[in-house]
Image (tube, rainbow, N blue to C red; front, side, top):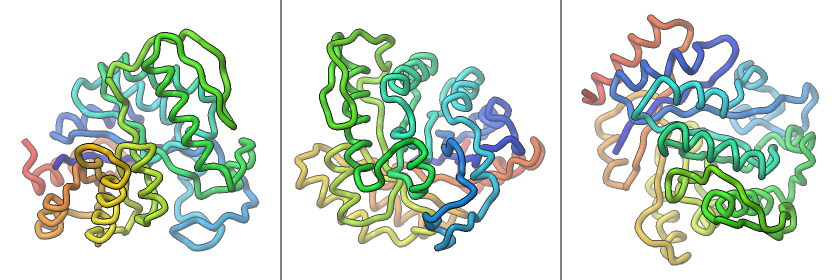
Length: 281
């Protein structure tokens, strides 16, 4: 089981190229950032954390672009995985996004993990012309089309939302398969989707008792005929030896912690403290 850091990037926090080396130097294995293109001022969609249209943090409207952020982090690190928790691929053009991700994977020597979400902010999705009731199908097609572009010499795709004829596109992804993880609630519907179209699951904030969910995920994984085990990334607030031991037995592959990013001193002190608690060296 590895440990990583998630930063709620914004124009008020430490820049990724400043924070990422601190994360790597402290012994953490991965660096995750989120994505929101914009936040409509008038919304009908409820935030999963507040239960209504209010936002728990103004950084939602100040979020940095994830790919630019991770590219800047890639330039000043050499070992940590560069990931999203979570990105919203359906808000981008799939051909352009495939190129961006393949380029990031190439420049980072194969360190990219793509964490994706279905999108809770339906108003945001609507501005990108994403039909709310079809966003899961749309995301599946985007991932399948991008994988074709990442791996095939002449790629093509003919779906409901993505269509393009035989095409050349380089660079190909450095990794044989860029891992795709889905951040979503731990239920049967989501796990069947993951088993069919992704490589693992990212828990939602506050979801600590995940034993039943992991059992359900492994069942869906086996029924889909997938080999091995799914990756599981668990969000945590503070290290607890019993909980971490339980998660390790369940097959959790990565545990993520947030980081205060007001200034370098606070971030450095926090990372050193967490690293010590987790036995990182």
